[in-house]
Image (tube, rainbow, N blue to C red):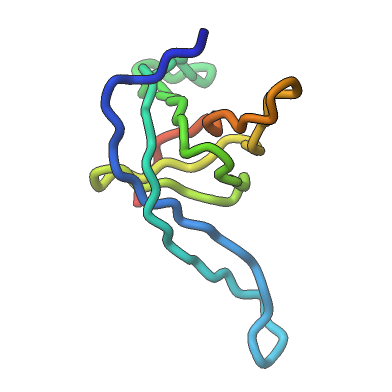
Length: 113
């Protein structure tokens, strides 16, 4: 059985979409949406390039978003002033027997603003 963190936290889902302006140039537009998220314990992995010691660890978290939330690989999430980028795609998943929609499981990595 999947158990979520005890406390939810408000988060801002920043949806990033590409488009074209009036002159035909590529532009990126951002829309912000307030959602509720549960953050799981971080998964730590060490990435040290050859010959470099003391590089920082990479922290990957798992967020559980409201059921049915669609998340793209270009999106970002802001939680308490920290920014996270989405790793991969996080589609909403339905139970094939009951049709109930599960919380959207989204892997994220912390980034600088």
